[in-house]
Length: 243
Image (cartoon, rainbow, N blue to C red):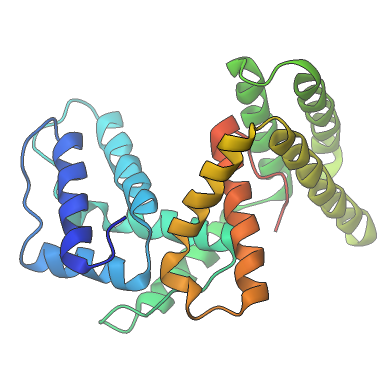
């Protein structure tokens, strides 16, 4: 795992080259400064790669590519994926960007996401992703039954969620949190010992930039959350909890 800006930028450049079908787009000058800021903020390489992937996916949806994608075009997606990762794991940025407004931009993006979210829409997305995970066929046995049961419960809740207020709404949100924990318990139980060790190592790598500044108990919680995120990623599971 790269730990210095030059190494980090080299890894990003190599990944960008692969995404551009071998066409070399150098990460130099202003682009180097931009990517160096990602490293300074503690953005894990894997998270940066996912942001780059998201940028390319959107670019391909617009039709055939006309020119190679520069890393600068991926900035918003990389920062968005980093925001999502931080919320899932529970860590603050390692540093602010040199422009001093990185935290404000992050808060604006989170506020916009929240404003567009609703409980019924969240439930619909969760059911759709659970259906896709079930169809993937990588679970099997008891886990399939668990997913089916959760999907049925969420599908039923979706029809009444729009009008819920007060205690009824809080009760549903608490139930979603319980279902999320139950699903993760079953997912973790299906992992072999070697896989669990690998995921724990990946979580440590993702959190490396934050470990020195986090209290031990906070780091332990973040590490478990990071492992949970990797388990979701491995099985294609959504986050059922509604914030």
